[in-house]
Length: 334
Image (cartoon, rainbow, N blue to C red; front, side, top):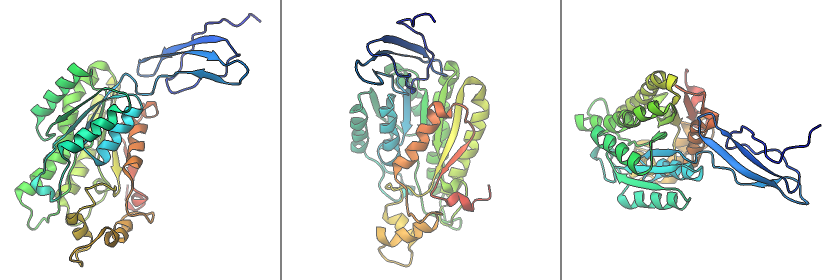
């Protein structure tokens, strides 16, 4: 057999490791991932040891990700995890309250803290106060991100609010605030980045819906309608963009331990029999909506699903809904 060449060209995905090399021999591993991104590493076998030592590019290195509602909660978790995977981040949040929400929303200080955590991962980051309800604002944000970081290749449309109301007495303002944030905001976010993704013939869009987008509950008609709407919107967008290498999917979480559920308004909805219900008071009620006996999930559990969909693992998944709801989906009809 001919002697092994000191240089070998091997096509690999960026997250895969090469097989062990003889001690002291050096190889160049070069290739392209499925999205066309160039990847490579200089690999040298370690003398006297099995295995290799090499620097591989991170899975999302060279990508730019936009996360809406990034000030805290799920948005912060998604942003930091994407940064750890190597993506540069664009963050946006309203950084102000909305009357219908009935609980304090993220602040500028919250958004700045998310930016600090992202930058600590060694990637570039921009953070802007932006209202997802405003299409022109989202278009302007996208232009600014393209200028400073490059074209957006990943969108996590996470911004959303909850509101307690009734079909008997909800005001136009209550309905509009929720629909405009949770549904129109997702449309505006997709609208802002989709053309660039189509031109690049690569993109990953993940919208955050809810188990209430797969079922329903009394007292939250606007929230329920908005989250059902997100799923329909994303299925339509998935069909429109599938031929251009852009995937569009939805993650539908159960109760997630963030300020959206840990507030007086939500606690009162869960325990109307108590004047001032506590976290401990509502935990059993919140666990009842899940199949597993847990009241809420951690944001990082939802983030794991987001990473699955935006990585190479999700390249052939589009128009789908991924339920992360501790078994609540066992009660859904479909």
